[in-house]
Length: 135
Image 1: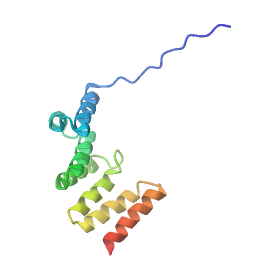
Image 2 (image 1 turned 45 degrees about the vertical axis):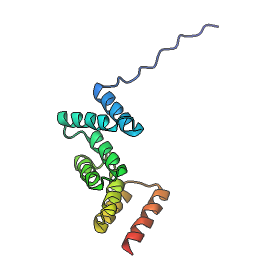
Image 3 (image 1 turned 90 degrees about the horizontal axis):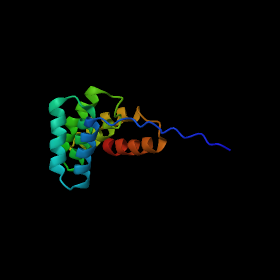
Image 4 (image 1 turned 120 degrees about the horizontal axis):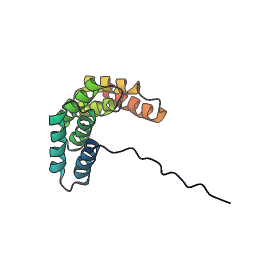
């Protein structure tokens, strides 16, 4: 019996931009040198101010670090660029607005997020949050 040599699966080449984003994310998430990671993100935005992935990641990091006003700005930027790429930005925008005490804005963001998912568990969780904010 003869075996046919297996053809290697061609991997999608990773761009230098993707590598830079991955490196910056790693630096921030691991906490080894988060400011270096943030600086890498800023360099990317200096070259491409509409890089949606960088704005999204910076929004997440802002939310995690308690810089909710910056998180609102980042997620609003993400959603102004595309509502389809990161629809969960509506959820995070709602969290940030809720943390700032903007109940109306939070409910609006949560309701918009609900239109982007069919996951009933997530929908019930968001409904609970909206209900708590409404009362």
